[in-house]
Image (cartoon, rainbow over all chains, first blue to last red):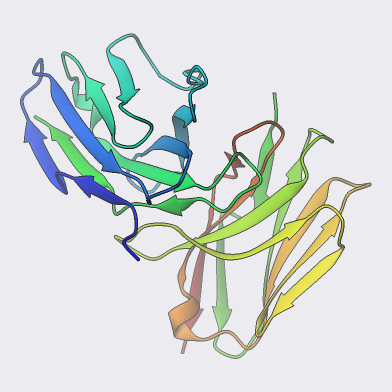
Length: 114
Length: 110
């Protein structure tokens, strides 16, 4: 079956512009996660959606970052007024349930802020 | 909150040798410990996981051991091959999300 997909695969933007990154999770997966991975670094947790519960936003680095998940499926991560330090790969993952289920990652969106 | 420490940060081995990566966690509530492999430019992929009700799990050349008392778990790769070269991440789940270690870059030289 189809895995997690993300779009765009690459995004180049100018400092100060807003960007939207999209994630399509595996059908039927109730949990969805966003991570940020800077070059050569680890996986930094950003936000977690589980079913209809309020999202866990504890990893968002600033109020310029926000995310939503519509209809329990597709999610959009928005970065407002982008800064050069936002340049990274943004990875989305989904799982059948919560933290004890296997997470399946998407291919990521590589964001470059000039 | 949970802290997952991973060592070493880099590991170089000769093809055919074994490689061991170790992780420690702080929250005793964690009960699921997956390992992910990330090849250069690709997405992380699960290679093996272990739950707290077992102490060891093996899948061909890969094994994971868990010591709940000491709060540490390890990844063992035997008979390493060049295609094992990648970054490996451990993780633990103190709550409803995974906390990842900082990664180990494994290089296998032919």
